[in-house]
Image 1 (tube, rainbow, N blue to C red):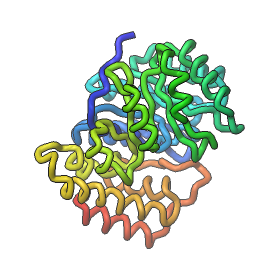
Image 2 (cartoon, one colour):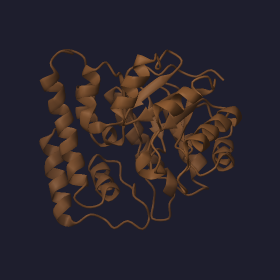
Image 3 (cartoon, rainbow, N blue to C red):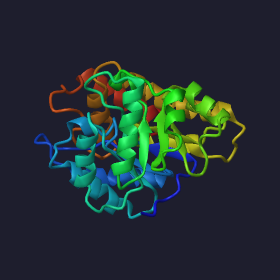
Length: 296
Protein backbone atom coordinates (compact mmCIF):
# COMPACT_ATOMS: atom_id res chain seq x y z
CA UNK A 1 0.00 0.00 0.00
CA UNK A 2 1.41 3.40 -1.00
CA UNK A 3 1.40 5.95 1.82
CA UNK A 4 2.19 9.64 1.98
CA UNK A 5 5.40 11.05 3.43
CA UNK A 6 5.19 12.58 6.91
CA UNK A 7 6.52 16.09 6.33
CA UNK A 8 7.79 18.40 9.07
CA UNK A 9 5.10 20.53 10.66
CA UNK A 10 2.24 20.25 13.13
CA UNK A 11 -0.06 17.25 13.33
CA UNK A 12 -3.40 17.75 15.13
CA UNK A 13 -5.01 14.94 17.06
CA UNK A 14 -8.62 15.43 16.01
CA UNK A 15 -11.45 15.53 18.51
CA UNK A 16 -14.48 13.34 17.80
CA UNK A 17 -17.81 15.23 18.12
CA UNK A 18 -20.74 12.95 18.96
CA UNK A 19 -24.36 13.28 20.05
CA UNK A 20 -25.69 12.25 23.46
CA UNK A 21 -26.29 8.81 21.90
CA UNK A 22 -22.67 8.59 20.70
CA UNK A 23 -23.34 9.15 16.99
CA UNK A 24 -20.78 11.12 15.01
CA UNK A 25 -21.80 14.70 14.19
CA UNK A 26 -20.42 14.75 10.67
CA UNK A 27 -20.87 18.48 10.05
CA UNK A 28 -18.78 19.41 13.10
CA UNK A 29 -16.12 16.86 12.26
CA UNK A 30 -15.86 18.07 8.67
CA UNK A 31 -15.52 21.68 9.81
CA UNK A 32 -12.85 20.74 12.36
CA UNK A 33 -10.83 18.96 9.68
CA UNK A 34 -11.22 21.94 7.38
CA UNK A 35 -9.94 24.31 10.06
CA UNK A 36 -6.83 22.17 10.45
CA UNK A 37 -6.15 21.91 6.74
CA UNK A 38 -6.60 25.67 6.35
CA UNK A 39 -4.22 26.24 9.28
CA UNK A 40 -1.49 24.31 7.48
CA UNK A 41 -1.46 20.97 9.28
CA UNK A 42 0.86 18.44 7.67
CA UNK A 43 -1.16 15.40 8.75
CA UNK A 44 -3.96 14.29 11.06
CA UNK A 45 -4.41 11.72 13.81
CA UNK A 46 -8.00 10.47 13.88
CA UNK A 47 -9.22 8.93 17.15
CA UNK A 48 -6.12 9.37 19.24
CA UNK A 49 -6.35 10.46 22.88
CA UNK A 50 -8.05 13.78 22.11
CA UNK A 51 -10.28 11.85 19.73
CA UNK A 52 -11.43 9.84 22.76
CA UNK A 53 -10.99 6.57 20.88
CA UNK A 54 -11.49 4.50 24.02
CA UNK A 55 -15.02 5.91 24.36
CA UNK A 56 -16.12 5.93 20.72
CA UNK A 57 -18.90 3.40 20.13
CA UNK A 58 -17.74 0.32 18.24
CA UNK A 59 -20.35 0.81 15.53
CA UNK A 60 -19.25 4.44 15.06
CA UNK A 61 -15.53 3.69 14.96
CA UNK A 62 -15.28 2.84 11.23
CA UNK A 63 -17.66 5.70 10.38
CA UNK A 64 -15.41 8.26 12.10
CA UNK A 65 -12.40 6.98 10.17
CA UNK A 66 -14.34 6.90 6.89
CA UNK A 67 -15.61 10.44 7.33
CA UNK A 68 -12.09 11.66 8.05
CA UNK A 69 -10.65 9.96 4.97
CA UNK A 70 -13.41 11.19 2.69
CA UNK A 71 -13.09 14.74 3.98
CA UNK A 72 -9.31 14.87 3.67
CA UNK A 73 -9.30 13.35 0.16
CA UNK A 74 -5.59 12.49 0.43
CA UNK A 75 -4.59 16.15 0.72
CA UNK A 76 -2.40 15.16 3.68
CA UNK A 77 -1.59 11.96 5.62
CA UNK A 78 -4.18 10.43 7.94
CA UNK A 79 -3.34 8.13 10.84
CA UNK A 80 -6.00 6.28 12.84
CA UNK A 81 -5.85 5.17 16.46
CA UNK A 82 -6.27 1.43 17.05
CA UNK A 83 -5.34 1.22 20.74
CA UNK A 84 -6.48 -1.87 22.62
CA UNK A 85 -5.28 -4.54 25.02
CA UNK A 86 -4.19 -7.38 22.74
CA UNK A 87 -2.93 -7.91 19.22
CA UNK A 88 -6.16 -9.69 18.28
CA UNK A 89 -8.34 -6.82 19.52
CA UNK A 90 -6.19 -4.26 17.70
CA UNK A 91 -6.48 -6.43 14.60
CA UNK A 92 -10.27 -6.28 14.91
CA UNK A 93 -10.05 -2.49 14.85
CA UNK A 94 -7.82 -2.58 11.78
CA UNK A 95 -10.23 -5.00 10.06
CA UNK A 96 -13.09 -2.61 10.84
CA UNK A 97 -11.35 0.04 8.72
CA UNK A 98 -11.98 -2.09 5.64
CA UNK A 99 -10.15 -0.80 2.59
CA UNK A 100 -9.81 2.83 3.73
CA UNK A 101 -6.74 4.55 2.31
CA UNK A 102 -4.94 5.73 5.41
CA UNK A 103 -1.25 6.27 6.04
CA UNK A 104 -0.81 4.41 9.29
CA UNK A 105 -2.35 3.10 12.48
CA UNK A 106 -1.31 4.33 15.93
CA UNK A 107 -1.20 1.94 18.88
CA UNK A 108 -0.09 2.13 22.50
CA UNK A 109 1.21 -0.85 24.39
CA UNK A 110 -1.60 -2.89 26.03
CA UNK A 111 -2.97 -0.94 28.99
CA UNK A 112 -5.23 -3.18 31.08
CA UNK A 113 -2.28 -4.85 32.79
CA UNK A 114 1.23 -3.49 33.12
CA UNK A 115 3.37 -5.22 30.48
CA UNK A 116 7.10 -5.87 30.77
CA UNK A 117 9.72 -4.99 28.17
CA UNK A 118 9.68 -8.34 26.40
CA UNK A 119 5.89 -8.27 26.22
CA UNK A 120 5.82 -4.79 24.68
CA UNK A 121 8.43 -5.72 22.09
CA UNK A 122 6.51 -8.88 21.23
CA UNK A 123 3.22 -6.96 21.04
CA UNK A 124 4.51 -4.47 18.48
CA UNK A 125 6.41 -7.15 16.55
CA UNK A 126 3.27 -9.26 16.14
CA UNK A 127 1.12 -6.21 15.38
CA UNK A 128 3.49 -5.06 12.65
CA UNK A 129 3.28 -8.50 11.01
CA UNK A 130 -0.52 -8.63 10.89
CA UNK A 131 -1.28 -4.97 10.15
CA UNK A 132 -2.08 -4.03 6.55
CA UNK A 133 -1.12 -0.46 7.43
CA UNK A 134 2.19 0.98 8.69
CA UNK A 135 2.34 0.93 12.50
CA UNK A 136 3.20 3.97 14.63
CA UNK A 137 4.05 3.42 18.28
CA UNK A 138 2.24 5.68 20.75
CA UNK A 139 4.30 6.14 23.92
CA UNK A 140 1.66 6.97 26.57
CA UNK A 141 2.95 5.82 29.97
CA UNK A 142 0.23 7.71 31.88
CA UNK A 143 -2.20 5.13 30.47
CA UNK A 144 -0.08 2.05 29.74
CA UNK A 145 1.94 2.23 33.00
CA UNK A 146 5.01 1.38 30.93
CA UNK A 147 7.10 3.96 29.04
CA UNK A 148 8.66 3.08 25.72
CA UNK A 149 12.42 2.91 26.22
CA UNK A 150 15.40 3.21 23.91
CA UNK A 151 16.08 -0.49 24.49
CA UNK A 152 12.63 -1.35 23.20
CA UNK A 153 13.15 0.79 20.13
CA UNK A 154 16.49 -0.87 19.41
CA UNK A 155 14.78 -4.26 19.63
CA UNK A 156 12.09 -3.09 17.19
CA UNK A 157 14.45 -1.29 14.81
CA UNK A 158 14.49 -4.06 12.21
CA UNK A 159 10.74 -4.70 12.17
CA UNK A 160 9.83 -3.49 8.65
CA UNK A 161 6.27 -2.29 9.20
CA UNK A 162 6.99 -0.09 12.23
CA UNK A 163 7.29 3.38 10.73
CA UNK A 164 7.43 5.81 13.62
CA UNK A 165 6.78 6.81 17.22
CA UNK A 166 4.76 9.47 19.01
CA UNK A 167 6.25 10.39 22.38
CA UNK A 168 6.53 13.24 24.89
CA UNK A 169 9.92 11.92 26.03
CA UNK A 170 12.36 14.47 24.61
CA UNK A 171 15.31 12.51 26.00
CA UNK A 172 14.21 9.38 24.14
CA UNK A 173 13.96 11.33 20.88
CA UNK A 174 17.43 12.80 21.28
CA UNK A 175 18.88 9.37 22.09
CA UNK A 176 17.18 7.93 19.01
CA UNK A 177 18.58 10.74 16.87
CA UNK A 178 22.10 9.97 18.09
CA UNK A 179 21.54 6.42 16.89
CA UNK A 180 20.15 7.57 13.52
CA UNK A 181 16.49 6.82 14.10
CA UNK A 182 14.14 9.23 12.32
CA UNK A 183 15.21 8.60 8.75
CA UNK A 184 12.93 9.13 5.76
CA UNK A 185 11.46 5.72 6.50
CA UNK A 186 10.85 6.33 10.22
CA UNK A 187 8.97 9.37 11.56
CA UNK A 188 9.31 10.76 15.08
CA UNK A 189 6.43 12.86 16.44
CA UNK A 190 6.98 14.89 19.59
CA UNK A 191 3.92 15.30 21.82
CA UNK A 192 5.27 17.29 24.77
CA UNK A 193 3.13 20.39 24.25
CA UNK A 194 4.82 22.47 26.95
CA UNK A 195 8.18 22.22 25.17
CA UNK A 196 7.19 22.45 21.52
CA UNK A 197 9.22 25.63 21.03
CA UNK A 198 12.29 24.02 22.59
CA UNK A 199 11.82 20.90 20.47
CA UNK A 200 11.65 23.03 17.33
CA UNK A 201 14.91 24.72 18.32
CA UNK A 202 16.44 21.25 18.69
CA UNK A 203 15.44 20.49 15.11
CA UNK A 204 12.54 18.18 15.96
CA UNK A 205 10.27 18.82 13.01
CA UNK A 206 6.98 17.04 13.74
CA UNK A 207 4.80 18.10 16.69
CA UNK A 208 1.54 16.27 17.46
CA UNK A 209 -1.14 17.32 19.94
CA UNK A 210 -4.88 17.69 20.31
CA UNK A 211 -4.70 21.34 21.42
CA UNK A 212 -3.93 22.34 17.83
CA UNK A 213 -7.55 21.61 16.90
CA UNK A 214 -9.02 24.27 19.20
CA UNK A 215 -6.32 26.86 18.45
CA UNK A 216 -6.03 26.92 14.63
CA UNK A 217 -4.89 30.55 14.47
CA UNK A 218 -2.08 30.18 16.99
CA UNK A 219 -1.11 26.76 15.65
CA UNK A 220 -0.65 28.19 12.18
CA UNK A 221 1.45 31.08 13.50
CA UNK A 222 3.55 28.77 15.69
CA UNK A 223 4.34 26.62 12.69
CA UNK A 224 5.10 29.40 10.23
CA UNK A 225 8.81 29.88 9.45
CA UNK A 226 8.71 33.40 8.10
CA UNK A 227 11.27 34.24 10.80
CA UNK A 228 12.49 30.89 12.16
CA UNK A 229 15.12 32.50 14.39
CA UNK A 230 12.61 34.62 16.29
CA UNK A 231 11.87 32.06 18.99
CA UNK A 232 10.42 34.65 21.34
CA UNK A 233 7.56 35.19 18.90
CA UNK A 234 7.03 31.46 18.42
CA UNK A 235 7.02 30.98 22.20
CA UNK A 236 4.31 33.63 22.50
CA UNK A 237 1.99 31.60 20.27
CA UNK A 238 2.76 28.46 22.24
CA UNK A 239 2.04 30.34 25.48
CA UNK A 240 -1.38 31.26 24.08
CA UNK A 241 -2.11 27.58 23.44
CA UNK A 242 -0.85 26.65 26.90
CA UNK A 243 -2.96 29.35 28.56
CA UNK A 244 -6.06 27.74 27.07
CA UNK A 245 -4.87 24.24 27.99
CA UNK A 246 -4.29 25.35 31.58
CA UNK A 247 -7.89 26.53 31.77
CA UNK A 248 -8.99 23.07 30.59
CA UNK A 249 -7.12 21.58 33.55
CA UNK A 250 -9.20 23.57 36.06
CA UNK A 251 -12.12 21.15 35.66
CA UNK A 252 -12.50 18.34 33.13
CA UNK A 253 -10.15 18.58 30.13
CA UNK A 254 -12.47 16.95 27.60
CA UNK A 255 -15.58 18.81 28.77
CA UNK A 256 -13.70 22.11 28.54
CA UNK A 257 -12.42 21.11 25.12
CA UNK A 258 -16.01 20.41 24.03
CA UNK A 259 -16.99 23.96 24.92
CA UNK A 260 -13.94 25.42 23.16
CA UNK A 261 -14.83 23.51 20.00
CA UNK A 262 -18.42 24.73 20.26
CA UNK A 263 -17.09 28.30 20.33
CA UNK A 264 -15.22 27.53 17.10
CA UNK A 265 -18.46 26.37 15.47
CA UNK A 266 -17.79 22.64 15.83
CA UNK A 267 -20.35 21.58 18.46
CA UNK A 268 -20.70 18.12 19.97
CA UNK A 269 -19.71 15.97 22.90
CA UNK A 270 -15.97 15.43 22.71
CA UNK A 271 -15.90 14.00 26.22
CA UNK A 272 -16.94 10.58 27.50
CA UNK A 273 -20.65 10.08 28.12
CA UNK A 274 -20.16 10.04 31.91
CA UNK A 275 -18.26 13.37 32.03
CA UNK A 276 -20.05 16.39 33.42
CA UNK A 277 -20.13 19.68 31.49
CA UNK A 278 -17.95 22.53 32.68
CA UNK A 279 -19.29 25.27 34.93
CA UNK A 280 -20.69 28.54 33.63
CA UNK A 281 -17.78 30.30 35.32
CA UNK A 282 -15.24 28.32 33.34
CA UNK A 283 -17.22 28.80 30.14
CA UNK A 284 -16.79 32.53 30.60
CA UNK A 285 -13.07 32.14 31.22
CA UNK A 286 -12.68 29.97 28.12
CA UNK A 287 -14.52 32.49 25.96
CA UNK A 288 -12.40 35.41 27.17
CA UNK A 289 -9.18 33.43 26.77
CA UNK A 290 -9.99 32.31 23.22
CA UNK A 291 -10.97 35.85 22.29
CA UNK A 292 -7.83 37.25 23.89
CA UNK A 293 -5.51 34.91 22.00
CA UNK A 294 -7.19 35.65 18.68
CA UNK A 295 -9.14 32.43 18.12
CA UNK A 296 -12.55 34.15 18.21
